[in-house]
Image (cartoon, rainbow over all chains, first blue to last red; front, side, top):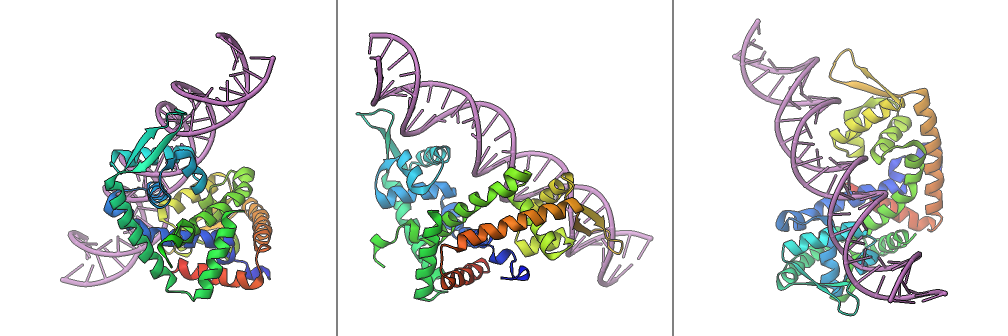
Length: 143
Length: 143
DNA sequence: TGTTGTTAGTTACAAAACTAACTAATACCT
DNA sequence: AGGTATTAGTTAGTTTTGTAACTAACAACA
């Protein structure tokens, strides 16, 4: 690659950020406008809805999120009555988080929105492109 | 796709964010640790170094950045003596931004780092994968 | 000329994120 | 048992971002 070809759009961290931001802004309206949620809150909600009850620590690890961010998201979701905490008896440092009825309803709605939003993005690509894109992104995320 | 297959790693906005964050963290050490720069500052510096002098407005448009963000980055770069502003005579609302000698040196160094960092990322993929990845990301960014 | 509208860029205030220090519970080791 | 180290999670203070209102310069047109 010659020097002239290396502009920002071919610099992977930049291209990833631009693409990530573009899609995030589009999806925000579902969780932000409709439910007043922040991105981290949506992620925590999704984790609990999709994978079942777990501790904040487990969410941190699965989502690569810092514990302070998760702690605040959990508080916010609790205040909205979307989740419940329950301290584990055998080790009172852990608290199991689980969605309330209302939380499950919100999750179900956002889950549907996520799927259809994802489908609308996917429509711009061939199945092969989607496969490559998905594989590469997940590989990068684990670097 | 069945419901069970739709987890976060296959949700494009999420996968993009995770990948973007992973690569950004890796590249931060170059501009942040070495030069105390923020991401927006690096982007502005790169624009001026790569494409030559231009106004803040032009940078906003090329980089899809909000004007307040650019305004602050320009002030920071000016304070570091990496760039100069000069008000255009024919329309005194515009100011042309250009890198100082020192700014050019920093740009050259970060440019080299960016290229080698990018190459180290690219090494994980086949030329074909890189091509698909690049094309898809730039397409998404323009949606 | 004067009024209205637009544009480039800045500033002020509020929201959100990051870092580091903290608390409370438990484990480990003597 | 008692002291030290870890671990889960929270809180406090700073930095960074986002939003909206602002200033200054110019344009357009009566």
